[in-house]
Length: 76
Image 1: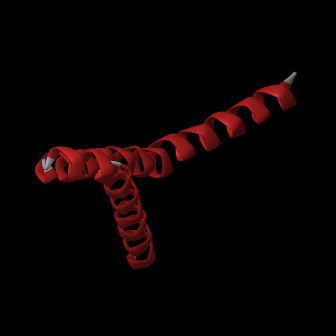
Image 2: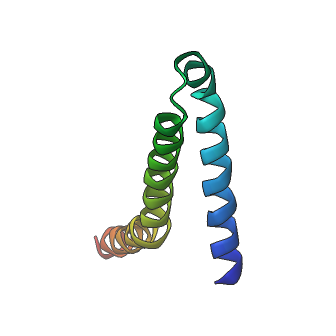
């Protein structure tokens, strides 16, 4: 569990840094740092939320569905 939290935290920080750097040039030109910071946080949080949902909900459900389909195929 601890490794999973570390992995997700590192993923969040990498996404945040990449987004912040991507939005950095327009921020320098306009002088609006708060917008780029908030945009980077929102994008990183959305990606993290999707990643957690995918790993903890979608993948297990897909495995259950695959097992069910395999049993259904074997019964025919």
